[in-house]
Image 1 (cartoon, rainbow, N blue to C red):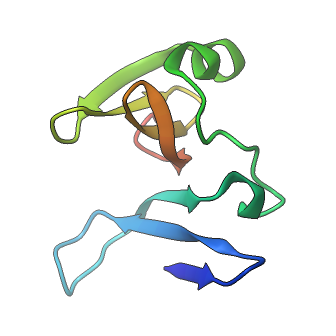
Image 2 (image 1 turned 60 degrees about the vertical axis):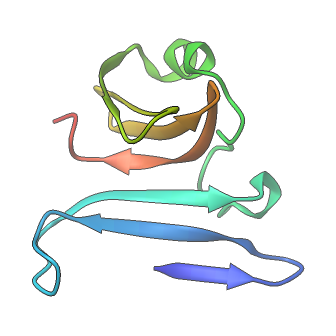
Image 3 (image 1 turned 120 degrees about the vertical axis):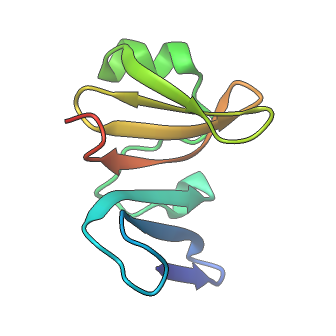
Amino acid sequence: MYDSIDSAHDGTIDVFFDGAPGHPGAITAIAFVGKPETAPSELPVLTGRTREELARDYGEPIGSSPIRQGWQYPYSRNGVVAQMRGGKTYEYGVSRRAK
């Protein structure tokens, strides 16, 4: 996990694995959460975007999983994933789940 909190970098990059705790397997997703202006320059800024905006730009989600009450996890065929709450993107990245 990359976690940099200072005046220039206020965000976290999470790496998700498919293995058990203490025995990580393959990487399944990489995601960013933080202030939009601090996202790595290689990432498009998706924070705050709606599901409709994501579908227009990255394709209609092929699935969505509830994370917990009020949160959704839509994922697209091209690998774009988002954690959404209140209809807005909170965390986003890429995943192999859609493959």
